[in-house]
Every structure is written in C-alpha cells, then in structure tokens.
Image (tube, rainbow, N blue to C red; front, top):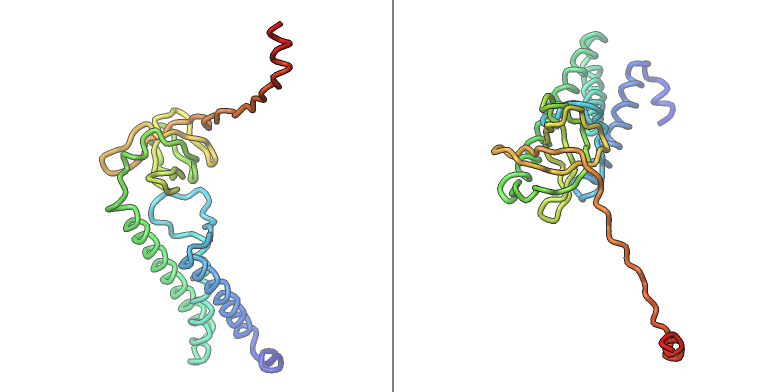
Length: 206
C-alpha cells in the first residue's frame, strides 16, 4: 500500500489524501446527524436561511473534490481540466447539501410549530441580529418544550451579538420572531428552615 502510494504523482497523492480524509469525516458527520448527535456548524457571521458555507458543506466539498479529481486523472485528463472539474463538482455538492438542509429545516419548522407559543420566551442569540430590523439573525429559544433555532429581528437601535440573552416580544405573520435584549430570569432561592427542638422553643417563649 505504501509502495503504491509513493509511486503516484504528487497531484494523485493529494487527491487521494483529500478523498480518503474527507470521506471519513463526512461519514462520521452524517452518522452523528442522522443519529441525533450534535454536529455543530462553523457558520460564523452569515445570513440566516440558505447557508452555503458550513462545516458539513465544506466536508462534502472536499470529499467530492477528491473523488472527482481521482476519476479525472484515471480518465487521462490534463491537470488544469482535472482541477477545474473537481472544483465544480465540489461546489455542486455544497449547493446540494445546503439545499437539502434548508428544506429539511423548513419542513421541521412548519406544520406542528405554532410560532405564537414563542411569545415571552427567553433565549440566546445564535447568529447576530442587525439593529432596527436591518439584518435577520437566528436565536435559540425553547418553544413547545423543544429548543429551536429560529429566524429573528429586533427593533433595538443596537445590534444583538452572539450570546446575547433575548426575550421574544412579538411574532410576525410569516413566523419571524421580534426580540429584545433582556436578562436571564432569576430563579427563586430555596431556603432550608430547621425546626427548633421543643425544649428550645419553650425557652424562647419564656
């Protein structure tokens, strides 16, 4: 195996490494996603909704980039054409995965979810929200007993950054939350009272 790999040209070695490593990570991510595990996207500060650049999509890009490049090399194509075709195939894979996750999220949010139940819910900003409804973001709030990631706007004159604690103050007709900055609710403290022995109670009464 090592001898076969060492006899390959540099471009072939590069494509094989990218394809194998990408396939392994892609398999793990897919298993975690469909098994209900947490495979968090590294999305950064991007617009909510159709998310083209994400961790899953990038893994899909490198996986298809590697295997399509290997196929082009085996077909005897030139280096320039091999790189061009493999990049196009990788980008197409990113578009397909982004569309797939987008429509799955829309299906899961529609039908059974009543957005009005999110009123007065306290949550946290996930993707930053622009001031005065200038930029849509996302918030994590508990609705109908489930933590959900929903689109949100704010009437605040200052932008709400990631991690800001918010409260849902209104919901638009198309299901977008209107939120405002708030604080985490203070949980009531539970004080433990001890009953004095009867003999001590009598002394106090005297």
